[in-house]
Image (cartoon, rainbow, N blue to C red; front, side, top):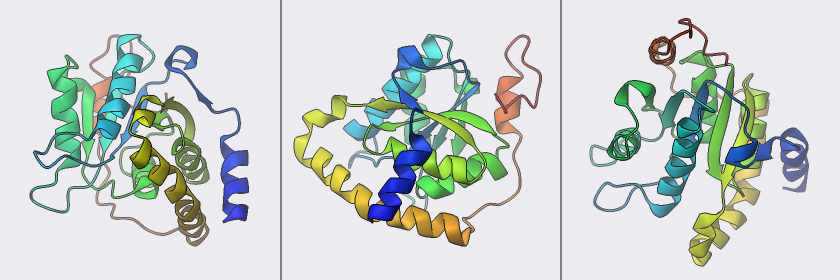
Length: 208
């Protein structure tokens, strides 16, 4: 666990900041964080989506790639994420859903190999971001992070998330070292298609 934490800290060093610090990067990846019983985003996930909307509205990003689990008929994270964003004024044409982002590793690998993204901003709670960035960089995605701390008001869930990062870090190392193959499927042009709707943004500019 200690070795994993050292790797994560080194890989993510200097790569996490606030919305106001973020450079202009075409694509932002929002990782799933669960749904409420009514199918809406949990407070942790809503906070991630709120940070992503700040990036979009301040012109720091153009396309929001929402990645989550969709294995159960009544648990569709990407669609719930898209619906939340659309309800808050983000154009649906600028949102791309990744239906097989079952964990952070899967989402990072699929961003590169399915959606063709080579550079992105990743949004998550601040305790989770270093691991997500380390994974992205290990699988060929140049990533920086924008974190959320507002969810710390949910102190019990926040503490649980912090503690979970220790074993999750070990899993991340195993995934990277073994080059675990997530569910992939055919390559998609959806990110490039969304970028092409912006004036002066040629199709295929997903590299950011």
